[in-house]
Amino acid sequence: MKQIIWWHGTTSARKARAILRDGFRKGTYFARHLEDALEFGGRHVFTVQFTVQFKPGHRGWRRWQVALSNALPADAIVNYEVYSIRHVAGQPTGGKRELVDIEAEVRGETDKAIRLHDGIRTDWFPKYLVEDNRDGTFTIPVWLAQERGFI
Image (cartoon, rainbow, N blue to C red; front, side, top):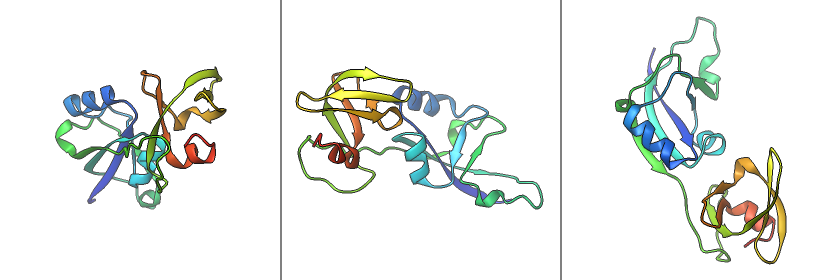
């Protein structure tokens, strides 16, 4: 067995504060790569180090994620960082992991998508890529905002 670095992402600052205080619950998922924690978890990312024991013959080291079989205390956290590069809408940016806040109102919603209107255009966005900031703004990836014409 050896210690391995893993990442866990969450979209909520409230949840991140609870993790910093209480650690991780049993069943929490961790990604083997930072980009997976960002993509499937959220921009509040924890770097942790712990040992994972796989059964003999198991191809576990190739797995992209694992779930905790026990709780993990907060002192296992190596680093906590919020990955968000904020830009004023309309300014040029590049990079797939950058985020932008857009001012918009909700014009429709389904279980998996949200329809946003910025005063000029209206389009559907996958919910897993949108964070509602609860102040009339929504955080979405720059590439998606550009693709849909919102910046």
